[in-house]
Image 1 (cartoon, rainbow, N blue to C red):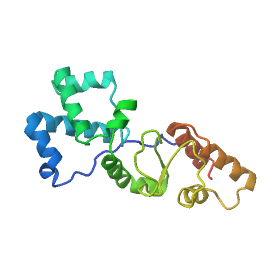
Image 2: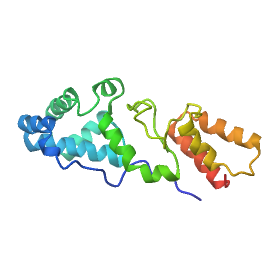
Image 3: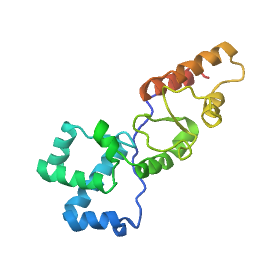
Image 4: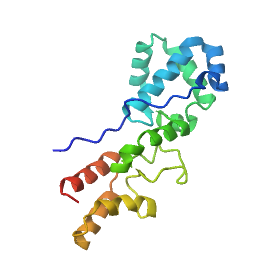
Length: 196
């Protein structure tokens, strides 16, 4: 039996000019090495777990605070700074307690390029910030019927030429009607197991 597709990353690209970026220099000037450490820790958690976002609820706050030996007030102050400076998307955090950014998502989609060449990579539309023009064709969204040429390419390429038209339509509907990333991944996995 096939295993569940990996969501997160084992490693992520890191810009060589990270420490000369203006936002990072201000972070360091304001909070010292602790601010840099928090930001890098959060990036690692984002890329390791879901790949492009982190649900930063109260449980996550407590564990991060404990892992980095920060008091809750200092963590809150540094997080607010990261949000105000645009290192994380403020709106997404205020609405859903999600830490992400457009730059994180751009790096994520580049990092999953090889994975995406084999199988589409499903992302949650509620947390995806990139416009359709910025989103690579191997990134798919559950819950939307995928009939644009770039997304449909993956559905069509997975179907064997001998498959009946009815089965093809049924499979497309199942994938297109997936309500979550997990449902989409399961539908794609089932199709692969059946040899389609």
